[in-house]
Length: 395
Ligand SMILES: Cc1ncc(COP(=O)(O)O)c(C=O)c1O
Image 1 (tube, rainbow, N blue to C red):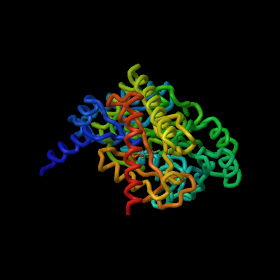
Image 2 (cartoon, rainbow, N blue to C red; image 1 turned 45 degrees about the horizontal axis):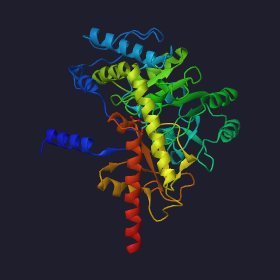
Image 3 (cartoon, rainbow, N blue to C red; image 1 turned 180 degrees about the vertical axis):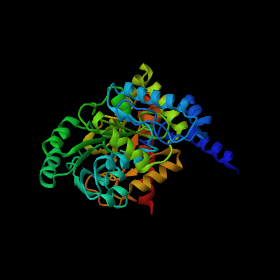
Image 4 (cartoon, helix red, strand yellow; image 1 turned 90 degrees about the vertical axis):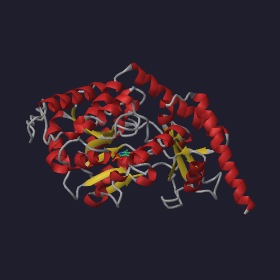
């Protein structure tokens, strides 16, 4: 086996499996071309001149072409979100974007108010095993017993703890996030308001989720989930924070930008500006709702009782108390259906086992799914889970 044998095997796995991991997608041939291009050879530490930050220059010669590319990429991303916020397209990933976003306006030891991992937040939102939890004083807001963000709790904890930054955004939250409300709370306690829109960025670009632009001070995202692009991160910020954000990326937390990935991000932005992308996102939302409704019809508990976006969480606690999320994930893997286990509100199991699964339809919608395909898949998963129950009773 050599490298290309592994790539071929993975290609076949991706072609044959049903992919329900909410953070994955399939990129276009053009994104592949850009990220596999000669731009991988170019070092370009620094920035092209930027209209907001005034940052000038690279630390290497031969950058005249990549300067144009990076400026074009920035302009395209402003177009995607119809914004005049400053954008930095250099973060290597969502996690690097979040690290730099924090470092741009905070000092280690400052307080951040966010949603914790068990309730749907991300590792970089303050988990104790992550840099965020190690560097900052984290306070977490909760979700209601039904799984909705508890906005009253945000208000209370903001007043009590006077955080320097309030963070909205999640990895496993199926409802609209009220950015207006959290932004007002942040203003009332003098905190920066940051939104990590990694999961829902495609929906925001297509107008299927309210936008945080004009409300948040700093907005981070990945480009590879619902935006359906190359792997990577972006940071948007109010123009007055541009210099702080740019220097938090370089030289603060990264070295040379990945110019082939920046080319991939530019293609991603071009695609996200098209009417076809908006239509794709509308279909993602329809498919996810159809699949979620089918699970409800089949008797399953869904966290919050439904979905407004590209994902939902099945809570197995009441209906299948003897099956963990991990058991279901493993059994579905054997049937060529890929998803991930997920904690549910009031979780009793460890995150390694969990009592729920997270299901997303962004990737399968790219493969052409319509509502009926999503419904059939829900029935198939139900059949497999019923088989697992039968097996348990036989033991
Ligand atoms: C909300 C959120 N933020 C940040 C990230 C981190 O992105 P990356 O894996 O590119 O570091 C993720 C990844 O799943 C995420 O869900």
